[in-house]
Amino acid sequence: MKTTHKIQFTAIHRILHWVMALTMPILFITGFLRMYWMNKNSIIGIIQTKASAIPKETMTEIAVSIREPMWQWHEVFAQVMVFAFIVRIIYMIIKGIRFPNPFKSNLTVKERLQGFIYVYFYVFVLISAITVNQ
Image (cartoon, rainbow, N blue to C red; front, side):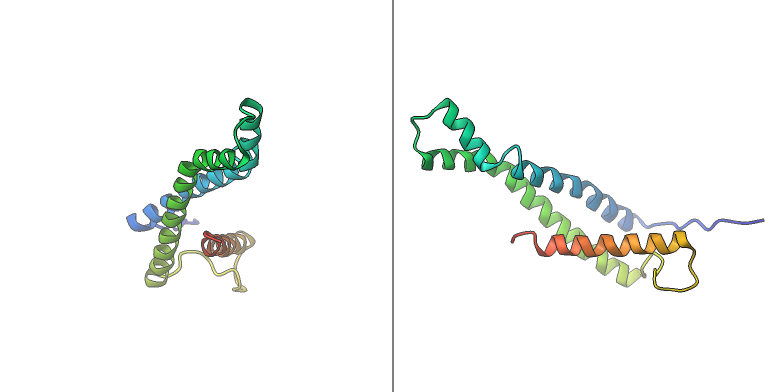
């Protein structure tokens, strides 16, 4: 009879997981909005069609003012993400890493894939955290 071993994650691990899981879509949405729908040039174009008598510099100031609150949310959640990422890495070092090492030779394909997904995730989150204000 085959028994399955169920890993129990601590409350801290779960909280860090969900903080990061909820922060990522918010960062994506606010970044996407800044690049496309709330693009400075798009907003300036809309202002030009409705009020062509306003100088271009004023239109730029208006566009920046419209986008500012959304971008502040992006920066706040970026800081939350960086903090949660650092805490999670420290937590994993202290408690031991909870995902399979994809470089071990005695793993199944599923475990190796799971390990590589974790490694890619942490590398991409690290890159994102490093480039957050650049």
